[in-house]
Length: 130
Image (cartoon, rainbow, N blue to C red; front, side, top):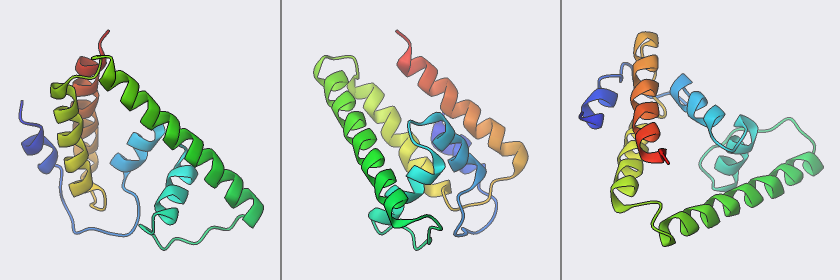
């Protein structure tokens, strides 16, 4: 199964500035909320989006994002160090990440969104099987 080909088939229109449905679905399955993810992008200067929340609420969210991000990194280190996360798994994650990067700002035909997410889910199910 060639992930690169299957995900690239989903490309349809030129990039835009909004998160597409694929990206939103991935965020929903992640440890971060969409707002937290947008804050991470903002803090890394990867978006110019303005927030309509108080400074206090924004910085509380920044703190929560940092804690979750660190926990993710500790988990990654632990899983890799203990041999749970293998090189093949890392290769799959890297390839999926590269493909999501290609389509992150693209509009995807609605009928292809489910197919793309299905491929991602199938690969992650195989990789995460215990």
